[in-house]
Image (cartoon, rainbow, N blue to C red; front, side, top):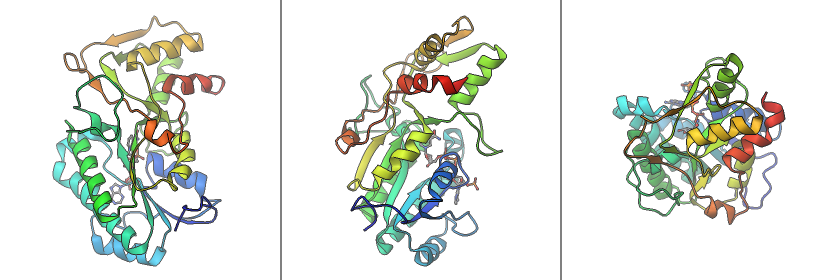
Length: 291
Ligand SMILES: NC(=O)c1ccc[n+]([C@@H]2O[C@H](COP(=O)([O-])OP(=O)(O)OC[C@H]3O[C@@H](n4cnc5c(N)ncnc54)[C@H](OP(=O)(O)O)[C@@H]3O)[C@@H](O)[C@H]2O)c1
C-alpha cells in the first residue's frame, strides 16, 4: 500500500484542485519525482460520482491528495447547497473510490472546524466541535465521510497558508504578499486583535505532506502553532524585520466580544515526527528572503 513502507518515490499520486493555491504548488514540487495526475473539472467532476469512479479506475492512484473545494468561507456561507455538493458530497465520492481502489486518501480539511469552540487554548483533534460557519460544518461532515467510507484516510486540519510568490495569475493575495505590498507602499495596515490562528508557510505544508502519506487513518492538525493574536503576530514581525510599527493599526471590531480562537495544537502529528515551526519563527526565519 502506498507510503506504508515510507518509500514514496515514483508513486502514482492524484491531486485534485491542482489549479488552486495549494494543489498547484503540490504539482509543481512533486511532478518530477512522482507520477502525478491532476485532473481538471472536465476530466473528473467531483459533483458526479460516475465521473470520479471512472477517472479513479483508469488512473489507479496509490495516493490521492484532495485539495479541490469551495475554499472561500464567504461563498460557502452564501451558497450552502452548491458548496455542500463539492465540499461534502464530492469528498464522499472520492473517499468511496479510494476505498475501492485501495488508494490512501489525504483530505485537506481546515482549522475553521474550531471556529465557534469555547476557550482560548490551542485546539486538539479529539475535542467536541460545533463549527459556527458553513465552511467549517462542511469540512467536519466531509471528514466524517472520509473516515466512514475509507477509514485509512488522513484528514489534515490545515491553517491559513501563505507564500511569498504568486504562482498563478488568478491567485488572490495571501497573508504574506498583502503584508509585503502594504510595507512596500508605506500604507497603513490593520489586523484583528481578537483573532487567534496559526498562519503557515505553504511550502512547508507541501514538504511535510510526504510524511502524512505514512500516517495511520485519522484526523490531524497540520500547520504552525501561534501563541499571538493576528495583530500581535504582525507587530512582532515588523519589529523583527527592523521596521517601525507606526503604520500598524489595531482592528478591534472584528470578533469583538467573542474572540475567535482557531489555534491548533500539534501534539498528535508531532508523535509521528511531523513538526512545523511556529508562525512567527517561520516568518522571521525567512527574513532575508522576505524583502
Ligand atoms: N488556502 C488556505 O489558506 C487553506 C486553509 C485551510 C484549508 N484549506 C483547504 O485546502 C484545500 C486547498 O485550498 P486552496 O487554497 O488551494 O483552494 P483554492 O485555491 O480555492 O483551490 C480550489 C481548487 O478546487 C477546484 N474545484 C472547485 N470546485 C471543483 C469541482 N466541482 N470539481 C473539481 N475541482 C473543483 C478549483 O478548480 P478551479 O480553479 O477550476 O475552479 C481549484 O483548483 C481546500 O480544501 C481548502 O478548503 C485551505
